[in-house]
Length: 234
Image (cartoon, rainbow, N blue to C red):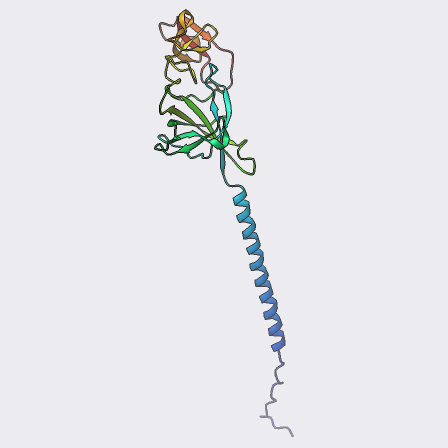
């Protein structure tokens, strides 16, 4: 008769060391593979960010009697502030400009105002006394010097020499105090002779012209230009 108090011992445990080692190896491979993938992706992202690093291009307003005209040029910075100085960029002649310290011997102008950029010609109006208008743009990729997205416009004044942007001097852009001829072309007041008419205001309609206006000149439509009528006095 069997002993009712006898306990049957449990079966010996199976050896699982081989299974544990296999799972450990698989886990190590997964972790190592994930780290390698993240390393590769991180390197790729770093390369991408470098290739898309910002550069800038610019265009300087031509010193002609068309206030919206511009010449192609380039610049090395899009972080301009009022009071910054700049000068010609020898690597981007003849119309390239770069930011410089005001004490630098190559500095030729100082920023007197910074305007938002615009893709519309003639839509930027710098203050009187602006001798140079530089449209700064930011670009990505290998062709950063040739094109880009406009970011702002630097209104610059020459540090020395002539100031074509002074009211009446006849250059850069049309402002109150300049002179124009009957064809609405800007002329220097001092040398314009009898054809020169003084600009009293730049407005949208003739009704807005101030008293004293005897030659209101309505211009052809130009998208973006802040005025359509030159209030002139002969």
